[in-house]
Length: 296
Image (tube, rainbow, N blue to C red):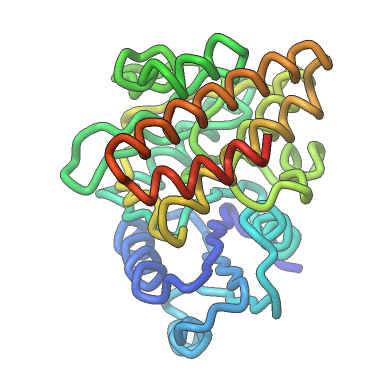
């Protein structure tokens, strides 16, 4: 198997146009680059015509696209694990399908990583919203105070949970929308936990990395637009997945006491949101947090 410098891995699920735009932005960003790269798209059995579009893109060798159809919806984590196994690159970039690469962002991220890989093991770009405002993506591990601040104190707003620094710095974890590492490190960790379908995969991965002495850093000179929630259906599903993610993470990494305290926080959040929904007559809040309460 011919070795490349970089494999860029994207997971697609019913996001045909978004995935097409993402691929176009990658190739535009890497125009005339010296990096030998490939784009690997793993499609989770999309039903929106993605397969036909991706096959057409892959036929043009200039797009450097390798397309794989899973035949079922593996989810984000297992989809990435599948893609990494197919990767020919020494370095890998896990990139969300709902991203648009700005300027030379990938090249900047790659060059910085290669020049600093003695201490940088996982590296994330600065994510931006569609209007180019900063999107919090440098994050703290979910200790109980951080969970409380996330769910009940708008922790991102106050910088208590996630932030978007303007300087290179070490962080606990970075958003899974854009993570660069080596195939060696990813496989050493056995990739994303296959039991997590969506949400909390990167937190678990980088938590395990930290325990092995592998560091995560945030690099703001590389900037990428992250549209956000483009591959999720509605708001209820993501919220329920977040609840399940918290519970899974605590069952796996924390004590029974911590898990008990987490359940109290999750129930309190669900009760407050459900109560607000009742007052406002908001069926979305009522339905979503009634289900969330039952999950806990």
